[in-house]
Length: 396
Image (tube, rainbow, N blue to C red; front, side):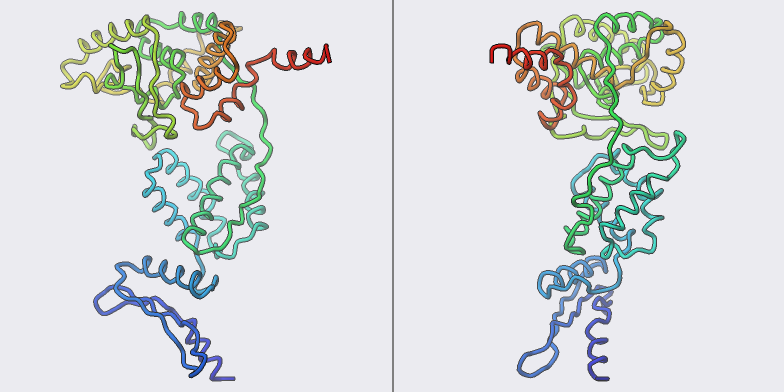
């Protein structure tokens, strides 16, 4: 009995060790020979890092020896390091990575500080979600269901990476349903309302006025619009190429990729707006020619060597809101994208175009990754559809 205990201790001792040449090796017990009873071992040497050796060990134990629990616990910090490596490999957006870092630092790293992430169950995940719902929000109160759902996407991703790296056989988040979110009625401006909004700008506020014209006339996301330079504007063919997205983090502007592959798109613009952009480009050059060598690299809203940023826009909105008429509501920046879509839908219906064609056109112009996204967001803009369905039964 004593000899058996010694053999078990020897079998499960640390399998990853340092070599004399400063590299790492894996030495794993591979069971016992059926005839001689002697212990078999699997060895592999010269791993550059301990982490690389540990991954190899985990892969071998799970896929060759069919062992799930094989070594010391998997910490949340180690699992997060794998997520960061995966993000770097995939070239994920900096904004997404920063959001994940915040979720991890503020919430996950604290809650799972002492946890073995291999052993976390679906019950543990539900308890974590309940804990999140009671955490304070910077906007007052506690975190909303919408915010918690966003965080749970990250948690699901963490365990997907654990499975991918063969540290677990399952994802405890699978089958977990999203919390119900409060439905927000979409706000948008009609063409008449936008013209009223547009008339309220003062002359020195033209960069902001131009930004909102871009949002209204193209349907771009605010980040895409703030990353727009003259290099992306084709005056001969009347289009804008959407390639980048700007975001502001820790006092700096970052230019990254657009939201999805489909967000890389070409948006054609009407001739009057093209002519306005041409005139403004010449004026802008006169303002900034002493500061630039490549005017095509300028952000199209610049009137100083500094680019227009998200915080600049937020501060402007506070001031601008004060001069609005009492019965006129200032919609969110993203709602100008909805305004663009609503106008295109109304024009399509007026021209007798089919609903499927309108949705397909919207999907391409807005850069949605799926037609389902377009339908889910904008199907309510077809108010007569339900009436038509009901009237179809008149002659049943």
